[in-house]
Length: 428
Image 1 (cartoon, rainbow, N blue to C red):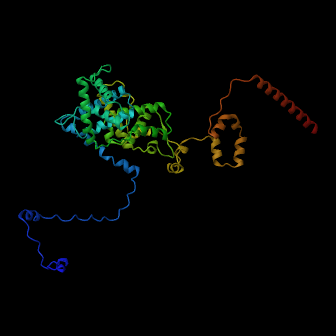
Image 2 (cartoon, rainbow, N blue to C red):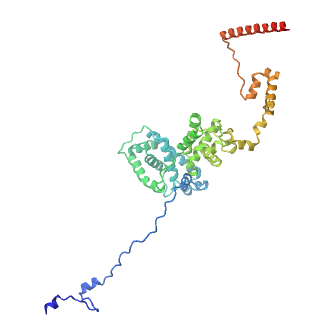
Image 3 (cartoon, one colour):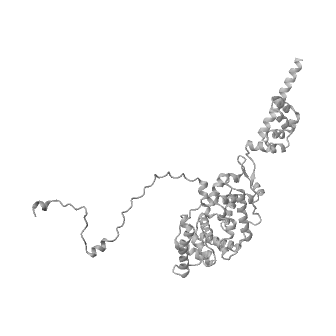
């Protein structure tokens, strides 16, 4: 072969076929070749982010934890065989378990309130009895453990276990050994049900506290220094935790109902502002106030904890008439007074002097009133009727120096009058 043929480029024929291959290679070559990876899909231009929801809408997004009265009456525990009264009693005992253990741990009241809410919500998903039923003391201990972490008032697991074990044994002075079966039974129960509770609560552990709303409402109404009203309202919130109140309405409505209950219980009246009653300014609703008071009244009547300090005698109702009893009308706008037609002014009887002044405020009328002898006879009472202020009380104590100066002034005045009379006689 010539050198030209050796170095000439090889040209494949138009009907080129690859050479035959062995059976092993043929089997491997006959495998299907996967298609090429598709190109990533093209997305349209990103749409602008939605505007943030207003506060009222964000508050309503938590509606999954608000239930009607019929839904609460048909809870999983009732469906499993408990009567509604028995379920309410067990709920109250579970929350009382939380409070007692929290007192041993010196946990703030806000944290105890959050634990009570976790407890009440859990039993709207799982019953207390039945095949999947969980005892209310186990869930109460778990709720307290979870609330201390959610509200950032953490306690050691050992401390919580010892506290709940003491409350369960009804002995605050009981010595609990960390190696005892009682200690490990409670610890295992708390850690086991914590995961179950978080799943059933959908990890919704950030709560609004009615205690915070109560403080803001009292400041808004100017009642933050009213200690008597504040204490009764705070006690109302504590008692409402024993009930299903947190499942019926939001924390703001519960706080408004607490202010009404305290004002009605103490016989106080809260003044209006601009013709608006106090509960409207606080963002309350009359129907919800009545419902909240009815729920607490039911708890007081049943008294599942056997307490003796419940305000059964003086606890008010929530009817519209009793709600108006806490309102002090005042500060009405001119439009509201015009609509009512001046009923207050027409109903009050006026004195003769007030009628004369009202007839016209010109100088002639005022002069005639001032020259009327009856005006001077009435003295302070007549002036008070015009000015709208109570008459001044006469002082019974007289200063000797003042009395001496007054007597000298009177004598000098008599002398001047006598001189004037003599001069008048000479002129005549």
